[in-house]
View 1 (tube, rainbow, N blue to C red):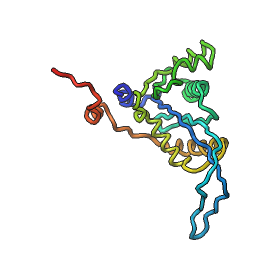
View 2: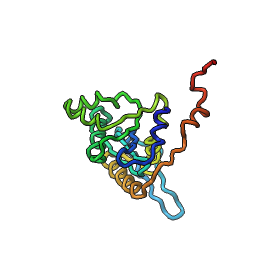
View 3: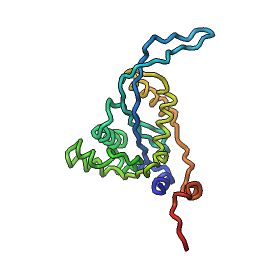
View 4: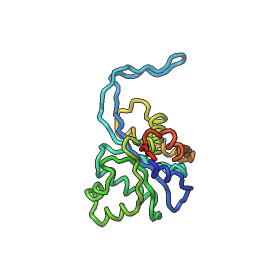
Length: 208
């Protein structure tokens, strides 16, 4: 935890960006009955019944101090999907950066082995070396600022029924462009000194 908080204390450095990454499933929900459109004096009406059309996966990476984020929607959650997303961050979003600090959780797919399963060894090693990884502790994913960005995405864009993969992609692409144009930053205020007070119970007791 304190390692992640030290990363967040770093000043903005375009040559060594701090990027947070997370992923989350999104259920594809369809209507069983045609909704009644909103009219003057009457709200839109949606039947409580719905049908499940499967699940898609949301990858998100955001650079909090730059106010930028990148979202990719995939049909499934796989090791190869994560490896491809990491490669895109390195080669398409930060092609001229020697080392990017990447904050993410300890999910079992977020490992070097996923890169080696997706790419030849030379390519996997090249991608891995482009990053300095900072993992959030177990049960501490709330320390990942990408989780904040995911909550914003869900609240502003995906908080309704969407029944197909392509529509999710279109909606998320529009949201990403709008939020990036606003340069929406995250003002992180939780620091190590706060953790040592508020989370004192988690620290070992030392008898002197």
